[in-house]
Length: 79
Image 1 (cartoon, rainbow, N blue to C red):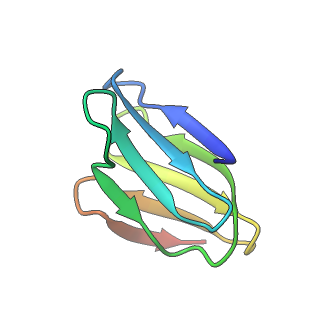
Image 2: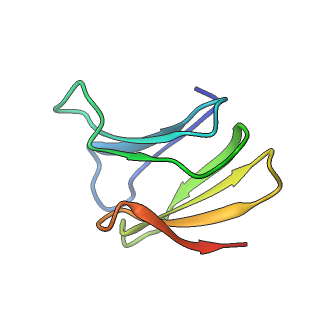
């Protein structure tokens, strides 16, 4: 794990980013991830959950920023 952040709207929810570029969404009530986000080709640098807790922004050593939809479970924007 190289980055993590908690949801501002849902306190028991958090995301972690790993050196392999994968992002995991967890709930404190479960041991396994609720969602797994795959798309970055290199390690995660930083993560942020939008204040409405519907999106995750991630940056990576692959020199991209991705916007992920938590409800859809996919990347909705690539910068």
